[in-house]
Image 1 (spheres, helix red, strand yellow):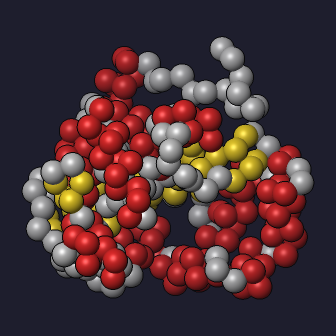
Image 2: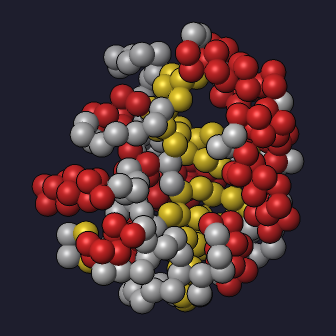
Length: 278
Protein backbone atom coordinates (compact mmCIF):
# COMPACT_ATOMS: atom_id res chain seq x y z
CA UNK A 1 0.00 0.00 0.00
CA UNK A 2 1.36 3.42 -0.96
CA UNK A 3 2.28 5.69 1.95
CA UNK A 4 1.15 9.32 1.67
CA UNK A 5 3.07 12.00 3.61
CA UNK A 6 3.97 9.57 6.35
CA UNK A 7 0.42 8.30 6.84
CA UNK A 8 -0.67 4.77 6.06
CA UNK A 9 -4.44 4.78 5.40
CA UNK A 10 -6.48 2.65 7.75
CA UNK A 11 -7.89 -0.58 6.33
CA UNK A 12 -11.62 -1.09 6.80
CA UNK A 13 -12.58 -3.21 9.78
CA UNK A 14 -13.20 -6.86 9.05
CA UNK A 15 -16.84 -7.51 8.14
CA UNK A 16 -17.14 -10.32 10.68
CA UNK A 17 -15.67 -8.12 13.41
CA UNK A 18 -18.18 -5.41 12.52
CA UNK A 19 -21.04 -7.89 12.80
CA UNK A 20 -19.78 -9.24 16.14
CA UNK A 21 -19.35 -5.73 17.52
CA UNK A 22 -22.81 -4.67 16.35
CA UNK A 23 -24.37 -7.43 18.42
CA UNK A 24 -22.82 -6.10 21.63
CA UNK A 25 -22.61 -2.31 21.15
CA UNK A 26 -25.56 0.03 20.87
CA UNK A 27 -24.70 3.52 22.05
CA UNK A 28 -27.25 6.21 22.80
CA UNK A 29 -26.62 9.34 20.75
CA UNK A 30 -26.96 13.01 21.59
CA UNK A 31 -27.27 15.52 18.73
CA UNK A 32 -26.35 19.07 19.68
CA UNK A 33 -28.72 21.24 17.63
CA UNK A 34 -29.15 24.32 19.80
CA UNK A 35 -26.80 26.77 18.08
CA UNK A 36 -28.69 29.93 16.99
CA UNK A 37 -28.45 30.88 13.32
CA UNK A 38 -26.34 33.92 12.50
CA UNK A 39 -28.09 37.00 11.11
CA UNK A 40 -27.15 36.19 7.50
CA UNK A 41 -28.44 32.62 7.86
CA UNK A 42 -31.71 33.89 9.37
CA UNK A 43 -32.18 36.41 6.57
CA UNK A 44 -31.56 33.90 3.79
CA UNK A 45 -33.40 30.86 5.16
CA UNK A 46 -35.85 32.32 7.71
CA UNK A 47 -34.64 29.95 10.45
CA UNK A 48 -33.94 30.53 14.13
CA UNK A 49 -31.34 27.75 14.48
CA UNK A 50 -28.50 26.66 12.24
CA UNK A 51 -29.66 23.03 12.40
CA UNK A 52 -32.89 24.02 10.61
CA UNK A 53 -31.19 25.25 7.42
CA UNK A 54 -32.56 23.28 4.45
CA UNK A 55 -30.03 21.20 2.52
CA UNK A 56 -31.03 18.97 -0.39
CA UNK A 57 -34.69 18.97 0.57
CA UNK A 58 -34.52 18.54 4.35
CA UNK A 59 -33.15 20.22 7.45
CA UNK A 60 -29.43 19.90 8.02
CA UNK A 61 -29.93 18.11 11.34
CA UNK A 62 -32.32 15.63 9.70
CA UNK A 63 -29.47 14.28 7.56
CA UNK A 64 -27.54 13.55 10.76
CA UNK A 65 -30.51 11.93 12.50
CA UNK A 66 -31.22 9.73 9.46
CA UNK A 67 -27.61 8.53 9.39
CA UNK A 68 -27.68 7.76 13.12
CA UNK A 69 -30.93 5.80 12.75
CA UNK A 70 -29.40 3.74 9.94
CA UNK A 71 -26.22 2.98 11.91
CA UNK A 72 -25.98 -0.47 13.50
CA UNK A 73 -24.24 0.74 16.66
CA UNK A 74 -26.65 3.54 17.59
CA UNK A 75 -29.74 3.16 19.74
CA UNK A 76 -31.65 5.92 21.50
CA UNK A 77 -31.29 9.36 19.81
CA UNK A 78 -31.77 12.53 21.82
CA UNK A 79 -31.82 15.86 19.98
CA UNK A 80 -31.09 18.97 22.01
CA UNK A 81 -32.59 22.12 20.49
CA UNK A 82 -35.81 24.02 20.03
CA UNK A 83 -36.62 22.39 16.72
CA UNK A 84 -39.02 19.87 15.22
CA UNK A 85 -37.50 16.84 13.49
CA UNK A 86 -38.28 13.21 12.73
CA UNK A 87 -36.66 10.00 13.93
CA UNK A 88 -35.46 11.18 17.34
CA UNK A 89 -36.35 9.18 20.44
CA UNK A 90 -36.77 12.47 22.28
CA UNK A 91 -36.23 16.18 21.79
CA UNK A 92 -35.21 18.36 24.73
CA UNK A 93 -35.06 22.17 24.76
CA UNK A 94 -31.77 23.98 24.36
CA UNK A 95 -30.08 24.52 27.71
CA UNK A 96 -27.78 27.32 26.60
CA UNK A 97 -24.27 26.84 25.20
CA UNK A 98 -22.74 23.76 23.60
CA UNK A 99 -21.59 22.09 26.83
CA UNK A 100 -24.88 22.80 28.59
CA UNK A 101 -26.70 21.18 25.68
CA UNK A 102 -24.44 18.12 25.71
CA UNK A 103 -25.03 17.63 29.44
CA UNK A 104 -28.79 18.14 29.02
CA UNK A 105 -28.84 15.55 26.23
CA UNK A 106 -26.87 12.99 28.22
CA UNK A 107 -29.08 13.44 31.26
CA UNK A 108 -32.18 12.94 29.09
CA UNK A 109 -30.78 9.98 27.15
CA UNK A 110 -30.58 6.30 28.08
CA UNK A 111 -26.86 6.45 28.88
CA UNK A 112 -26.08 5.00 32.29
CA UNK A 113 -23.85 6.80 34.76
CA UNK A 114 -20.86 4.70 33.67
CA UNK A 115 -22.02 4.07 30.12
CA UNK A 116 -20.76 5.52 26.87
CA UNK A 117 -22.59 7.94 24.65
CA UNK A 118 -22.05 9.23 21.13
CA UNK A 119 -22.25 13.01 20.80
CA UNK A 120 -22.73 14.43 17.30
CA UNK A 121 -22.92 17.96 15.96
CA UNK A 122 -25.97 18.90 13.91
CA UNK A 123 -23.92 20.42 11.08
CA UNK A 124 -22.43 17.31 9.44
CA UNK A 125 -25.08 16.46 6.81
CA UNK A 126 -22.68 14.30 4.79
CA UNK A 127 -22.09 11.84 7.63
CA UNK A 128 -22.99 8.24 6.77
CA UNK A 129 -24.07 5.20 8.83
CA UNK A 130 -20.86 3.45 7.74
CA UNK A 131 -18.71 6.29 9.06
CA UNK A 132 -20.54 6.29 12.39
CA UNK A 133 -20.34 2.51 12.81
CA UNK A 134 -16.66 2.43 11.87
CA UNK A 135 -15.80 5.13 14.42
CA UNK A 136 -17.79 3.49 17.23
CA UNK A 137 -16.17 0.14 16.44
CA UNK A 138 -12.69 1.65 16.64
CA UNK A 139 -13.53 3.23 20.00
CA UNK A 140 -15.08 0.06 21.44
CA UNK A 141 -11.90 -1.63 22.68
CA UNK A 142 -10.22 1.55 23.93
CA UNK A 143 -9.90 2.29 27.63
CA UNK A 144 -10.76 5.97 27.37
CA UNK A 145 -13.15 8.55 28.80
CA UNK A 146 -13.11 10.58 25.59
CA UNK A 147 -12.51 9.38 22.02
CA UNK A 148 -12.01 12.04 19.37
CA UNK A 149 -11.78 11.37 15.61
CA UNK A 150 -8.87 12.64 13.55
CA UNK A 151 -8.90 12.45 9.75
CA UNK A 152 -5.78 12.46 7.55
CA UNK A 153 -5.47 15.51 5.31
CA UNK A 154 -4.99 13.30 2.25
CA UNK A 155 -8.25 11.45 2.87
CA UNK A 156 -10.17 14.68 3.50
CA UNK A 157 -8.89 16.49 0.42
CA UNK A 158 -9.33 13.46 -1.82
CA UNK A 159 -12.98 13.05 -0.81
CA UNK A 160 -13.89 16.75 -0.63
CA UNK A 161 -11.28 18.72 -2.60
CA UNK A 162 -13.26 21.98 -2.56
CA UNK A 163 -14.08 21.97 1.15
CA UNK A 164 -11.59 23.94 3.21
CA UNK A 165 -10.58 22.49 6.58
CA UNK A 166 -8.22 23.47 9.39
CA UNK A 167 -5.35 21.00 9.77
CA UNK A 168 -2.78 20.28 12.46
CA UNK A 169 0.66 18.77 11.90
CA UNK A 170 1.82 15.88 14.07
CA UNK A 171 4.69 13.43 13.88
CA UNK A 172 2.32 10.82 12.43
CA UNK A 173 0.92 13.10 9.71
CA UNK A 174 -1.38 16.08 9.13
CA UNK A 175 -4.93 15.75 10.41
CA UNK A 176 -8.23 17.55 10.80
CA UNK A 177 -10.75 16.89 13.55
CA UNK A 178 -14.18 15.32 13.38
CA UNK A 179 -17.54 16.33 14.76
CA UNK A 180 -18.68 13.19 16.55
CA UNK A 181 -17.14 11.87 19.76
CA UNK A 182 -17.61 8.87 22.02
CA UNK A 183 -17.35 9.59 25.73
CA UNK A 184 -18.26 8.26 29.13
CA UNK A 185 -21.58 9.79 30.10
CA UNK A 186 -20.18 11.09 33.39
CA UNK A 187 -17.25 12.89 31.74
CA UNK A 188 -18.93 16.16 30.62
CA UNK A 189 -21.14 16.26 33.71
CA UNK A 190 -18.26 15.98 36.18
CA UNK A 191 -15.89 18.21 34.19
CA UNK A 192 -18.20 20.86 32.71
CA UNK A 193 -16.41 23.81 34.36
CA UNK A 194 -12.98 22.56 33.31
CA UNK A 195 -14.09 21.94 29.73
CA UNK A 196 -15.55 25.45 29.62
CA UNK A 197 -12.21 26.88 30.72
CA UNK A 198 -10.36 25.01 27.98
CA UNK A 199 -12.85 26.04 25.28
CA UNK A 200 -12.79 29.68 26.37
CA UNK A 201 -8.98 29.74 26.51
CA UNK A 202 -8.54 28.68 22.89
CA UNK A 203 -9.05 32.26 21.65
CA UNK A 204 -6.36 33.81 23.86
CA UNK A 205 -2.72 32.79 23.56
CA UNK A 206 -2.04 33.86 27.16
CA UNK A 207 -4.99 31.99 28.65
CA UNK A 208 -4.14 28.97 26.54
CA UNK A 209 -0.58 28.98 27.86
CA UNK A 210 -1.96 29.12 31.39
CA UNK A 211 -4.27 26.15 30.80
CA UNK A 212 -1.99 23.81 28.85
CA UNK A 213 1.40 25.06 30.01
CA UNK A 214 3.86 27.30 28.19
CA UNK A 215 6.22 24.43 27.27
CA UNK A 216 3.41 22.46 25.66
CA UNK A 217 2.20 25.52 23.77
CA UNK A 218 5.70 26.20 22.42
CA UNK A 219 6.02 22.60 21.25
CA UNK A 220 2.66 22.86 19.49
CA UNK A 221 3.71 26.06 17.69
CA UNK A 222 6.98 24.44 16.61
CA UNK A 223 5.08 21.43 15.28
CA UNK A 224 2.84 23.64 13.14
CA UNK A 225 5.56 25.93 11.80
CA UNK A 226 8.96 24.23 11.89
CA UNK A 227 9.06 20.55 12.77
CA UNK A 228 6.00 18.29 12.88
CA UNK A 229 7.91 15.74 14.95
CA UNK A 230 7.83 18.11 17.93
CA UNK A 231 4.40 16.71 18.84
CA UNK A 232 3.08 13.18 18.36
CA UNK A 233 -0.29 11.61 19.14
CA UNK A 234 0.86 10.05 22.40
CA UNK A 235 2.07 13.42 23.69
CA UNK A 236 -1.16 15.09 22.59
CA UNK A 237 -3.33 12.46 24.29
CA UNK A 238 -1.30 12.65 27.49
CA UNK A 239 -1.40 16.45 27.57
CA UNK A 240 -5.13 16.77 26.93
CA UNK A 241 -5.80 13.95 29.36
CA UNK A 242 -3.83 15.78 32.05
CA UNK A 243 -5.71 19.01 31.42
CA UNK A 244 -9.13 17.35 31.44
CA UNK A 245 -8.29 14.80 34.14
CA UNK A 246 -9.43 12.00 31.84
CA UNK A 247 -8.19 9.21 29.58
CA UNK A 248 -8.22 10.66 26.07
CA UNK A 249 -7.67 8.83 22.78
CA UNK A 250 -7.35 10.25 19.28
CA UNK A 251 -8.98 7.77 16.92
CA UNK A 252 -7.85 7.79 13.30
CA UNK A 253 -10.64 7.37 10.79
CA UNK A 254 -10.61 7.35 7.01
CA UNK A 255 -14.15 8.75 6.74
CA UNK A 256 -13.91 12.52 6.03
CA UNK A 257 -17.71 12.79 6.24
CA UNK A 258 -17.29 12.96 10.02
CA UNK A 259 -15.35 16.20 9.72
CA UNK A 260 -17.24 17.90 6.88
CA UNK A 261 -19.12 20.44 8.98
CA UNK A 262 -21.17 23.28 7.50
CA UNK A 263 -20.27 26.49 9.32
CA UNK A 264 -20.23 28.89 6.36
CA UNK A 265 -23.01 29.73 3.91
CA UNK A 266 -20.88 28.96 0.87
CA UNK A 267 -20.40 25.38 2.09
CA UNK A 268 -24.10 24.63 1.70
CA UNK A 269 -23.86 24.64 -2.10
CA UNK A 270 -20.83 22.33 -1.94
CA UNK A 271 -22.68 19.88 0.30
CA UNK A 272 -25.76 19.91 -1.93
CA UNK A 273 -23.54 19.15 -4.93
CA UNK A 274 -22.03 16.15 -3.13
CA UNK A 275 -25.43 14.86 -2.02
CA UNK A 276 -26.73 15.30 -5.57
CA UNK A 277 -23.91 13.15 -6.96
CA UNK A 278 -24.51 10.47 -4.36
